[in-house]
Image 1 (tube, rainbow, N blue to C red):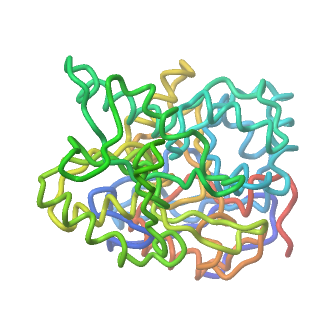
Image 2 (cartoon, one colour):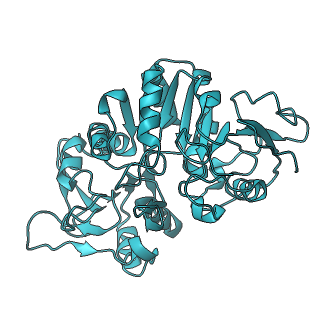
Image 3 (spheres, helix red, strand yellow):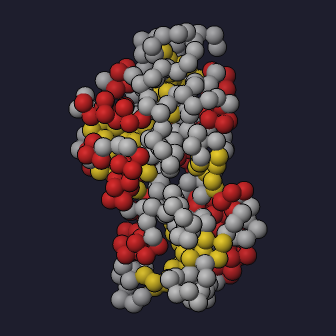
Length: 382
């Protein structure tokens, strides 16, 4: 395309007329007619929404005032934006402090299976000031509300066959809430110890089949699914649940997340298990991004017009497609889940050709309002 230049902020016009799939992208989440809603810089090369269907997104070397001054509030993803599950990402703590000083309102939107209050309580662990965040909307909170309404308020105890995180693993970073802690929000729900005993299947985590605190029923490992994505120890259980016609609920729709101090590893998540069950013919109620209602819930909590709010996320499927479908401006962070695909180091912008190719493959003609290398005010290396 040949018009990228070392400016503080500039617009990149990208065309696409195909649907793309990757990291679990579903065709229902992709629309070739949706466009970026946020204004682009004056260096825009084509008009948004012309007859060719071209859209634009502005590329920034850092999360700078060109973005910050456009909005009154930011909806922030956690993994890949703020932290990696173990540590805050470079520049994120400082940027949150800066946004707070500028009077910007912040709210968390996360595909964590933990309740909203737990998600907020965990932020100081990574070094963030919890007082800088007004509220949170999590897939765990929304899914537990659905379970309570559907199964937990019937007048009799219902039982969940619960796939979750391994509570026996020391300092397991994924265990943000215990199985019992999650189910406390769900009404009259108990743990099923067998498929025949269950009323529904719950995709809460992806490490073990949890069979309760009674030591006579040991948890069943789902490994090597989380490490390798292998369904060898998962499919037999899912097939048994399918034969029993168990409905399912997914409390965390993520397919893959980054792991490790530098985001060099990956873990396979509950959303991939839920998709597998649906491929087999099972039904599943899934909560979290890219569901439009979760973005709208954040906007309602803020009490602002959508154009004054901007989402920040690292997943093209979950964050960008969800925000665009909801009509909310969105910043795409390239150093998150797609960094290995881009072939860049943390804080580095991918080349324009790679960026175009990956976005076209993942979300068709959808485009974020802005692209940055990281959630940081530090400029990307040239």
